[in-house]
Length: 123
Image 1 (cartoon, rainbow, N blue to C red):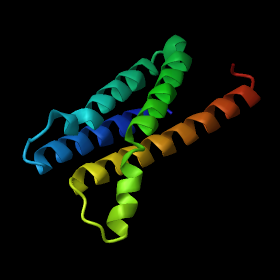
Image 2 (cartoon, one colour):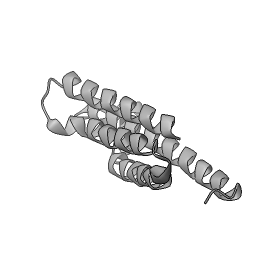
Image 3 (cartoon, rainbow, N blue to C red):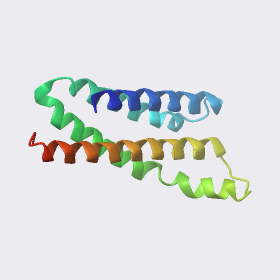
Image 4 (cartoon, one colour):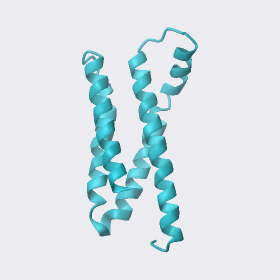
């Protein structure tokens, strides 16, 4: 999970930077995925310390849930785009959807990992 957490952090940083520079540096909010990515990297680094691993991974799972909740508002816009509608900021909708999906997959994998650890008696 540590490597997955670090990878997610890097992907979110890239997503945030691409969104920011792709919009002509119009809004700092385009960097929100990057801020999340930095925190995920922090959790990934902390997970390298054995006694902090459990807490770091639970923190990362909580952050993923916040990422899901915060970026879910882009999903309806994606369906509008697929329906042929003209939306105000399509790049923002794509970035929100990408962050939503990345955090959703991470949370799913984290829950699987927590269940496997509990079943193996590591808790």
